[in-house]
Length: 290
Image (cartoon, rainbow, N blue to C red; front, side):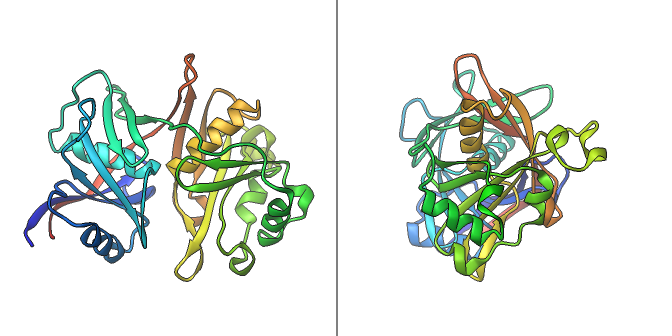
């Protein structure tokens, strides 16, 4: 074991402790998969990442992404948080975009010099199209909804195997109390219109967000909820914009039900690339013994 540079970064927020935290080990060289997994489990966070020298000639760095119990080929908030930490540690990209190498391949990340926001190019969906009706009925029951409350649904699989459902309003989304016994084994992302489509009039005026998003997945103690989820928002954007259910540029809110204030900036560029971005802020910087 030795001391390695470490950061804990809050992602999808410019205000510390209102986003989704990420543990970043800036030098993961020489660590085994078992050591990386053990450290991830110990952090008690949703994800931890380990930066390594790139293997692909076009990549600026390589990252391995872990959540409790398993390694992920791709995840959104670890992508932005790892890039934020890499840049903060003196990383310099080879070209116009930062290029991250991960289990899903090469992911482009762009940096807005004026705002400080980072955005990743959403990887292609591995699975798309409507969910089986039996699963939609199961999800409705597990969320305590009538089947008719789900107005649209789709596979949103870009690594994590998300199932996306859309409700009529943000109020419905925020009122959800999922039943872990019914939803066991499912990763469910829920989106509901905010602002103009929302039921509450006062909230409609001047709301900075188009959608309220919540993400549920099986955890160690039943159904867990993720504060802000880049991979889900990327897949939701590809689905919703592609289906004409969302504009090509919008901001999604996530984490409200958990006392967070995550903001995910979505843009579909003219070339068809979906960019998912937001602010990140370093909350802890130092060393970790690994």
